[in-house]
Length: 315
Image 1: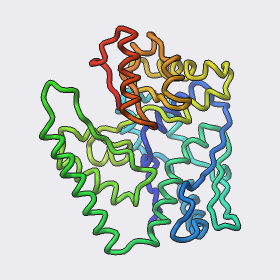
Image 2 (image 1 turned 90 degrees about the vertical axis):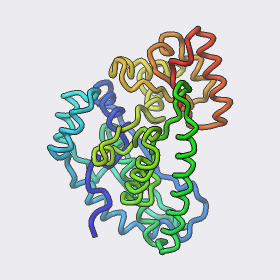
Image 3 (image 1 turned 120 degrees about the vertical axis):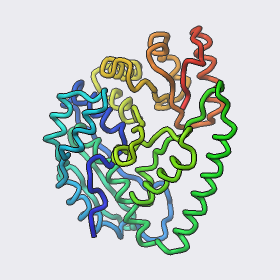
């Protein structure tokens, strides 16, 4: 059987965008990541997949970026030439990942090493764990139920597409499912189905490989880990959000202008998101809590700063 991850592009765009800042700003930083399954109960002990997971990680750590993949990344205007030089030499190191099971049959994964290595493992490992787990549960009934749910979502997308008014704020949909996917083939099928059903509102996917294959837009800016890293860097803790946003602005100078708001809560974020940042960033990303409450707070903040909220995006 072919390895689950066959291309280093098979990850989310924000891994590349964050890694570029890390390489330029704090390449010496050390990071630790740990896997925790949020489900208290699984159909079978997750630790049962460890032998297969070991094989998949060994295969993952043999991969390099191909010339074709690097050329694709070179076409993204925010990817810089020295970062591409780094990626050309890049290879994940197996020694940074430890895997073990415990007496309850739980799966434990710990990644520890330089952040320029450690942060890149996350999406690959989560996709691998999901696929290995679901392989043992696959039946024709499971696939039929997946297709039924997909078609329900297609009808919903078509409905929103039909209701879209030309002068109204756009309703857009993007795929961010790589880390939780059933497998790559299913993710590809879902995205293709969405694009064919509602091309006017399906904006793209976070998965760089699928964006490349399907000729759609790769989507993503930053994740929580980016801002969290600044909590441990050489800045005052109270200033970590400002330092992270400032580093982003200086790296991308107008590109990738969506800021993540919920690392320590929307209220704390808005206290740091002053007029300088509010004008420079194109909009804000919601990731937790009541989206209506969050949206009202964002709108009120732009109003207080006398910024026309119609020029900003909430995602």
